[in-house]
Structure formats: structure tokens, C-alpha cells
Image (cartoon, rainbow, N blue to C red; front, side, top):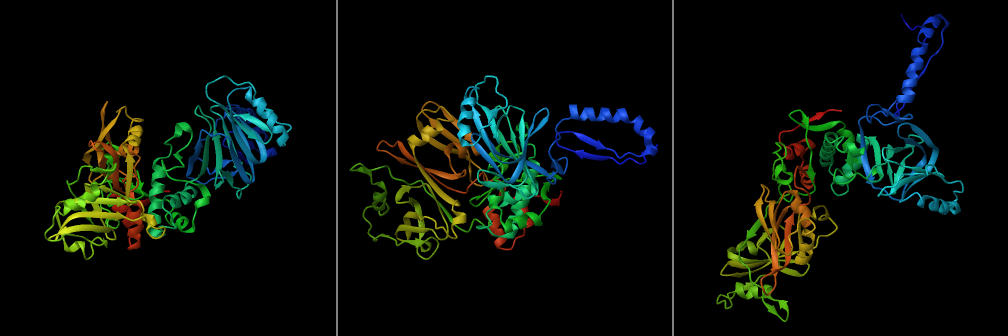
Length: 573
């Protein structure tokens, strides 16, 4: 039997209600009567027992507001307190738990507040009356006692209890309206979720719109304005996002808005060039053996990336192997020595760096050793001399001079040296503060951190009960020369720290470093000096290297296949 004369219209809402509307036709009266009870039962089931649909299953997300697939959920903030949400031209607000309730049809601002007990809420209500909320009331006054603060949300003139497993949906009143949080505009909608740890604000939007903020946030089009590098970044960020969808499903979102996942700051940082890179690579991802890769990337690799397992542990990853970053690592020299001088104090000050000059000259120099003029490394001057056995190596940073066991020299570095009979006996590198011009994008290629033993000891004891810090000793280096095993030696205990944790406990920019020490009169370390390269975890695509490759004519596919071994680029969505 055909249902001639009946036209069915289904309106689907994210809260799981389906409404069927029928147009009556006398020729089908019998069919209508036979289906009367079926339709009634159908509606009852959905209105009473319907549940929330999942994100990303439909293009119509909620009340007709369109979010094209694929949909991604980004946590803008956790454990919110006293937060305001605005809408450029109004928003609808729904409270969603076992059922849903429309709280506001056209609201322009919402405030989130915390209260410790029921008794504090009425007191807050009194403060609202002089501010223009004379009708403010507590929708749910009686709440159970618990240790943590219970979140409440001010919607127009009502306080709403945001209990666990309860959400508020903030829906722009029209497609052109934008929601604002923290002074930044965002595409899509907001979901404010209650949780044991406090309220969580989630931005739900289309993946490609998300990438229009991620790409300029991770690789600035102002400083790295090469379209092929930005395209490589777009594909890496898209692949990372898709592979990690649902990573924090238990908290109701996919990724953080911070570098813990990928940096996302809404529409405020979008740029035409990076948006073009996203649009021209739409749907393109990197795959290995038919599967999405974990497309990790790092800001500046310092000349070489590292094997993934050396930094993150676990099994080797075939496409995340150590790679020479030839475009970034220009020809240079690495000098090493075992030569140093013990501290020599005069008037309370250590003059050992000055006496190193006399030591390099062997006190009396019949051949008239001299202190050479300042000159760029690799140019005429130092390149005419041979490096003597175990020379004294010193590094000068911001007027502070220290002995170093290893020096990396690059074109453009300023050096001073002492030579006798054509051999360099002492060499000092002058680190010059970088300008705000062309050097700025590469300011973390090389760096140095000098910290007191006491400050470092206090930090390390937050992680391990080592007591007084005695020394730090690198035990193992990776393929890129990064420190991947470090002994932390204390008076009370000794621990072996591995991989990324090394960078975290020392509060350094990268694991690619050498350690030098300044000591007191008894030979005990007073300061630790970390001289390093790179910024980030050092695995995967090097963003600065990608930019330099693009400058020299490489395509985005060339770049990606350089840093991710054996991959293919495919259009998946």
C-alpha cells in the first residue's frame, strides 16, 4: 500500500525530538486511521525518551544553526570563574540535561559565577538589585553540600545552577552573529558544561574554520609569509586534529585551545594568506600505510629533528624519524674542550675568566701572543688559525662571561680569540641580543639560560625529593644530539629523567643543550648554564625549516615528505 496524499516533514533537533507533520487527504482516510496510534506512540517515545544526538552527525546542529561537517569541539577554558559571554547580535540559550529548556530567546550577555554554599547565593542576589536586576531570583536554591564550589550562571535576570552533566548551549541568533569570550570572537556555538572540576567552555565549529585560526597561530603569516609553508602547516594541523578527535571525550571536547593540542584563538588572528592556505588544501591530510599520521610539529628544531620514541617514549614511529634540517642548519662549527680553570677569587670576585688570558699565553709568551680583534666567525681572521689542543672556550651573554665545554659557531657570530704561533689558545663568543627585524623569527634557534643552584634545586624538588642539588649529568643523547637521559644527583636521592620530562623539569625551551657550571671557592656549583638550540619537543615538522624550504622553492608536499618519512598526501574529507 502506498501512502498517497501524505507528505511527511521531519524537523530534527539536537535534543532528540522529532516532529512529524502530515497533510490530510480524504482518499487515504483508512491508512490515516490505521497509523493513528503508531504515530502517537512514535511521538511519545521521542518527546519523553529522546536523548541528545552526538556532535558531527548532521549539518544542522541546533535550532537550524548550520555547522558543516566535520565538526570539532575545542575547550576554550576549564574551571571557569566570573566569565562573561557576549553575542554581537543576540543569542539563544538552552539548558540541556535529561531534557531541554529555553532560558533566553535573545540574550546579549551571560555571566558565570561560583558560590561555595547555598547561603552565599542570596547575598549575591542583593548586590544585583542596584545594578538593574530587581527581579533576579535563584532558580534552584537547594543544592547538596560538597567540598568544591558549585557553579551558577547568570542568564539575563536569573541564576541557573550548572550541575554536573548539565550543559548550556549558546546559539547565535543568526548566521552573521558571533559569540565573544575573553575579548575574542569565535565562529560556531558555545557549550558550557558542568563537571566535577568546574565549568568547561567549549567552542563547537567546523574543522576548516578552526584551522583558519590554528595555522596563523602556529606559523605566523606576518613573520613566515610563504604560502607553501603555510599549506604544509595547514595539512599538518588538519591531520593532527582529525587523528585526535575525541581525545578528551570524557570531558566533552576534542582538543585544547592551547599548544597542549594546537593554538587556537578564534577569529582575532585569522589572516588572508593563512586562510588561503587552508582553503587551497581543503580536506588534504597526511597518511602512512593508509592511516592518518600523528602530525607532530615543532617551532625550531636547532638543525635536526629527533626520533619520536627518544622524546615521547614508546615504540619507534616510522614516519617520525630524526631528520637533518639542512635549510635551517647553515654550515657552522662545533668546538669542544676539556679545558677550564678553577675559580680564583680576588676581593670576593671570581677572576678566573680574566686569568684565562694569561693561562692561554702560558704566562710568558716569547712569540708575543695577542688578543685578536672582534670578528665574525668563519671570516678572515680566525679561519687563518688552527685550533690548539684543549683551548679555553668562553661564552659572553649580557656582559656575563662563563667557561664552556662546547661552543657552536655559526656565520655571523662575533668572536674574540688569543693565538700563539698560529694556534688558537682561547676563544670567546659574544652573544649579541637579537633585533626585532629579520632575526626575530629565529630567536630561539640558539639560546642560553643561567640559573642559580638554589633556584634550580627548589624547582627540581617539586618533582623529585632529591634534597640539595649536587649535579646534573647527561647520560644519553639522541640522533639529533638532544639529551634524552639525564641524571639528577641530589644529596638524598638520584633520579634518571628521560625524554620530554627533561625539558619540563629544567624549564628549558628544548632538550638540545649542553651544561656548564660556575663554582665557588670549594669547587661546588653556584650556577648552572644551559646553552642550547631549538624551541619545542623537536619531533616532526620544523616550522622554521618549512619556511626556509619554501623560500628556496620547495612545495608543501616536498616539505611534508621531508619531515614525515614515507607519507602520502590524500584528500579525505
